[in-house]
Length: 194
Image (cartoon, one colour):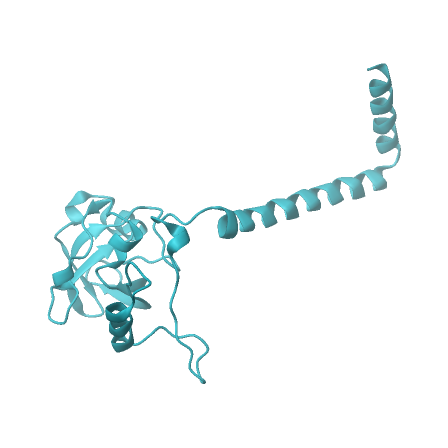
């Protein structure tokens, strides 16, 4: 133990007598620790942490390729064919990323949104934090115009109140009834407000 204290005192004296070397050493250590932390954070978020869905190891994303467009979601007709004829999947659901404009409730706001089939939430094992998700009868032409809010929009526009359920919101000049609010950690592909 005496040798350890002797070596520590010698190292401190050396660092104090060479301030330039000390600054470079501290800067190198800070950059190395910062870079390792950033890399591990990305790897943890992307590769190590499981997706917050039921059976994440069984999920896959189906896309199509066209000569002029590298990746595109399947058309509705192709989705119906996939869903009706697939024998290797326990379920198939569709989602489309879009943006919608929320009006009539304060300042207009552009919202990241996803249009999804009713089977999406049961397939992923995601339950609404408040209210419910889509019903099969709402997932057809002429079905009720309903919306499920993301947690962030619910907190921002409705102050986290349960009174948001049943209220109408106007998205791209169409009225939708709020039927549910998703959990705070829900995200499919990209964050969405509605």
